[in-house]
Length: 387
Length: 62
Image (cartoon, rainbow over all chains, first blue to last red; front, side, top):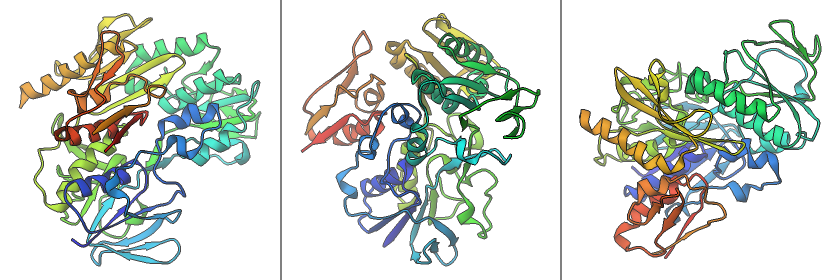
């Protein structure tokens, strides 16, 4: 393999390049990205980057010395590909040939389909998105956040801390329902409410700028200076159209992260839909911060034909809202039908376990940081005992 | 190999501890403690620890 092209220049793309070098690849490495910036860390976008003037340098990833010679093609997305001919076409019309391809294009923010008020509507996916939003999050601004997942809740907390009047609208009966379940969701809602955030639950958006600024499904009309759409994300895969791939939800991979078994194409990060030996044979995309690094290590070795252990990552992520640190290990979403408080009180600090068929599959901690190693070990041991 | 952790950035996530337990640990209060130098044989583990730091607070010199 002489030349490997990595499409996507965020965390997954960078980690793939580093891991290809670590696994012994000494050939040409090109990384193509649609954003103008070198890889940077996205979690601060909903927090520090909104709260103060944060430069790219402050959020840029540390890079290993091994990738100093990488050819970075930034600000130019790949628009199409021919996997049989092993060529890519970029937006500027140029083409790139490869021997090995890493798919690392990640996600883009999903937008609501209703038209109207375009200049007041924001998403928080890129550094440029966050910089644009920062300028309008001023004290007293009327902010409507649509969606109450982690991004919606973190942005609501940051906007409130900056003195904005914040209303969160979501379709579910509590915030963070699907990742955490109703009880922790309700607990986090109470903490936001204690800070002055208002929640309008079980409602969706009907229109923008027709009745009031934001009209909801129950007839409520809201005034809004700033509207933040935090309604999830969509895999960036259109550049792979026409190759006969299953692109129904990201890029379908085998257990070695090869794209549908191809020897010359692998996928990393949250665009990859892969089976995790830790849980079952089901292929899933995982939008957790730990996944780009884990998938890059495995995918690089698969692409180079270097042996590596079966892929069974323990996903993890965290969220900071006000003074509270939330940490998650494993797959709480798979254990939503059997949720037990393992330690402490949800109104204070606690550990909550998520079980499937009686087995612990995920742990979420509110605070209680000193207990992290213990619960992580419990999850690792639970898996080791099964295999 | 010299290891520097920017303690103004560090928020005690503990991810480095899982990658390189011989170098990083959380004390009883949940705060990070670490060795400032490590043997070359630990380079892979320390590189991984630096990769997985949510705050990107770990620098390796030499």
